[in-house]
Image (cartoon, rainbow, N blue to C red; front, side):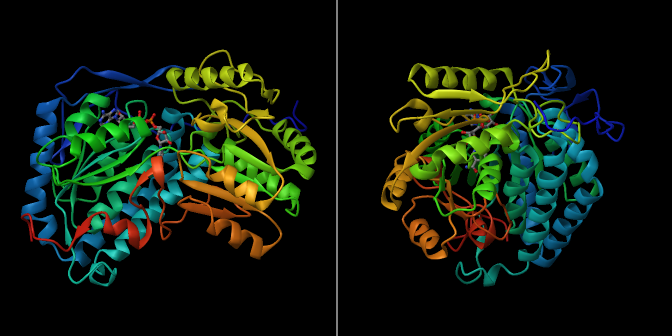
Amino acid sequence: MSFLEYAPAPESTAILHLRDEYGLFIDGAWTEGRGATFPTISPATEKRIATISSADATDVDRAVAAARRAYEKTWSRMPGGDRGKYLFRIARLLQERAREFAVAESLDNGKPIKESRDVDIPLVAAWFFYYAGWADKLDYAGLGAAPRALGVAAQVIPWNFPLLMLAWKIAPALAAGNTVVLKPAETTPLTALLFAEVVQQADLPPGVVNILTGAGDTGQALVEHPGVDKVAFTGSTAVGRQIARAVAGTGKKVTLELGGKAANIVFDDAPIDEAVEGIVDGIFFNQGHVCCAGSRLLVQENVHDEVVERLKTRMATLRLGDPLDKNTDIGAINSAEQLERIRALSAAGEEEGAERWSAPCVIPDTGFWFAPTIFDNVSTSSRIAREEIFGPVLSILTFRTPGEAIAKANNTPYGLSAGIWSDKGAKILAVADRLRAGVVWANAFNRFDPASPFGGYKESGYGREGGRHGLGAYLTTGPSKGGA
Ligand code: NAD
């Protein structure tokens, strides 16, 4: 049921001029990968968008060698102010091509165009603008006198925010004087390949940015390559663990941005309608494919019924469907595999006795979809309270006192983010202080800013991205490994 019916308002794809096949971007030029090709599809229609190359170990070798040459001959020797000019140029080009990138992202990932247009792409440009400003001020970043770049960075990213995760990785690395080899996720390579075009347009010296497509084996060959000085990974905790083992003892610097199971805590003195918006934003933004999603609602017992009732009313107004339609709130699940994972964990929730309620959406015939869903009366020990579902599924638990809310919020192997809803500033600060989470939002959720560091505790990973702290991951005050 929807309170208002909207006529379809699809964004045109005419602005996209995609190739039928994409190669790898190595040393400033396009080249065919030696591995088997694979299609990238639209998760909303299951139709092929383009054919993508896979990089094998030889391709990885070539890309790392190109990045090394570029690091030693040009990029690390260039004054920071000049590196900054390239980054400003990239940021402006991304803004000029913003609509094209938004359409490509929604097509390949399945996220609603209003999110790619109003959140992802503006943040991507903001990230490049922000780090462009740091490039000539590294001595003042509080990281010691005259910090230096590390060398070649191997960067592997997931599919939930494809271009934004690329920006989080590439912008600080280049500002600090490193060169990069980046591998996007196999289900969402498109915007990274369009970004390679921007790199060409910006006239970046060849080899400073290399883009390799492929699956996990390509990522593994890249992070394990002996020519790499730094590994930056965003993805699942399971793969993060493998990477940590693979690079242990090699001297490579590592940052891992992994999973999450954030608590969104609603106190009885919170403005309920605003909290409901925050709950919806926390778990249904980007179909819940968000590492810092507020996937556990902790609601104070005396307002539980009111919050859940208003939440259901609000969820019934969410429009699920064509990601390119400007009215769409909930797009497609990124892949058949991810849909299967969400279904399996939801089935486990039912088996464990939690009460399931799904918004009454019409599910399209083709593509991968999952209606926004809540589970009430969830126990802290159940799988849906502990495991990351990475989909539009909320687990609801209750508490009576702030102490109980804190204990339940921290009762997770993860520690990436949390939200607190209350009218009392002092209560928010006192609770936030005791939460083991990298980011705590107060009367808000899922807000991002390039100046603000982001990262986790425990199994959510280590290292920080964003802000001045994000530069530290790409700089050293130790002995030089070549370059300037
Ligand atoms: P994933 O770990 O399966 O894959 C991530 C990337 O790693 C992909 O590019 C994949 O090809 C590559 N990869 C797979 N196996 C590899 C290996 N052995 N060595 C090197 N690379 C390998 O994760 P996913 O399913 O794409 O993404 C979802 C996960 O990412 C979720 O757990 C989510 O919480 C996490 N995530 C975390 C953050 C954060 O900042 N903490 C941000 C976004 C997503």
